[in-house]
Image 1 (cartoon, rainbow, N blue to C red):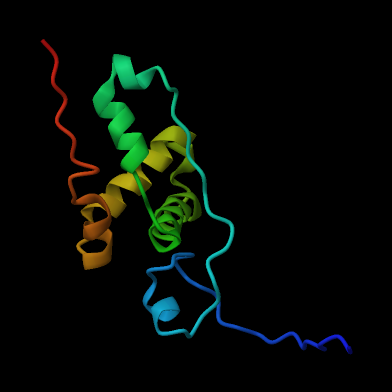
Image 2 (tube, rainbow, N blue to C red):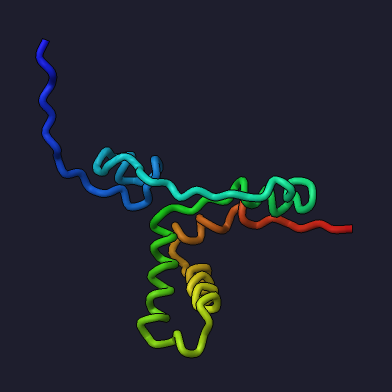
Length: 121
């Protein structure tokens, strides 16, 4: 038999790179690609179980990551670089993101996976 001839087509980018993005659910954008991976030291499970649980359950989509990077760029573009270290710029960018009242942003962090009580005796 003859092989099928495929033609490449342009499909909208999946903004969140997620199976749960509204455009993907509506079948209007591509499948998610290139997930960002995370890792945690397995010793956390016994030494700091709350931190281990957080790392295992932590999730953030590309839209939210893009918002944080955009916040960071605002500081860099406003020449704030001279008054803050690189780490401080990222901390301010994340802090601005946490203050954002966008429902998708709040839903990302305002859940039991992110808000973990730390118990020590």
